[in-house]
Length: 231
Image 1 (tube, rainbow, N blue to C red):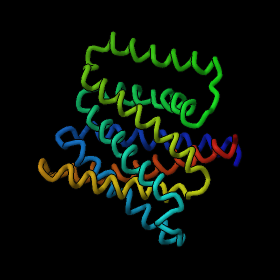
Image 2: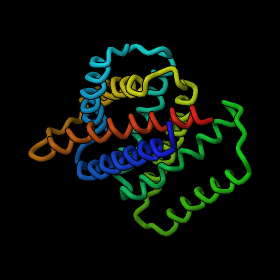
Image 3: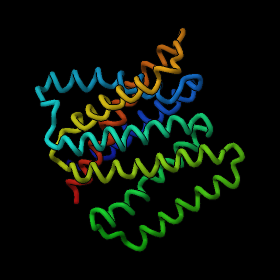
Image 4: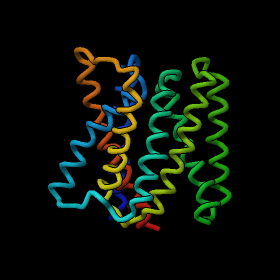
C-alpha cells in the first residue's frame, strides 16, 4: 500500500470523527452512555452487513485481545470522552484527546520494548506543554473535564498498543465489530436508569453518529494496519 492511500485513510478517519464529535455537542441533554449506545448500534448495521457480505468470521482469531480492545479499553476511552464534552468546548476536548500518542509511546517502551528517539520525546513534551497552556488560558476548560479527557487519552493510548499486538491477524471490520457489540451492551445497561426519549431531529443526529463513527473507526484501524506493515 502506498503513502497516498495511507493519507486518504487518515483524512477520511479525521473528517468522520470531526463530524461525529460536532454532532455530539448538539446532544448535550443525553447521557454519555446513551450516546455510546446510539453511536454503536448505528455502526453495527455497517459492520454486520460487511462481514456477512464478505463471509468473514465474526469470531476473529484473537478473542481475548479483541475483547480487551473493545470492552475494557475502547469503551472506557469513548465513554469518558463523551462525558468530557459536557464540561469542555468540543475543540478543547478533541485537542486534548490527541495526547493519546504520547501515552501510546510510553506504553510501547515498557510493554512492547520499543525505542523512542530523543526528538520524539521533545515533541511529546511540547504537546503536553500545550495542554498546560490550554488549561491556563482557556477559562472554559474545567478541571473535572480535563481529568476525564486525560484518562480518556490514556485508555486511547492503550488502544494503539493492543492494535499493535493484534497486528495483521484481524480484518479491520472484525476489530470494529467487537468494539461496537461491547459498546452497545455497555451503553444499553448504562442508560437504562436515565433514558431520555429523543424527539424530532434528535433521532437523525443520534442516527448519524453511527455512520460517522463507523467510517472513522474503520479507516483509523486501516491506517494503523498500514503503519504496522510499513515498519
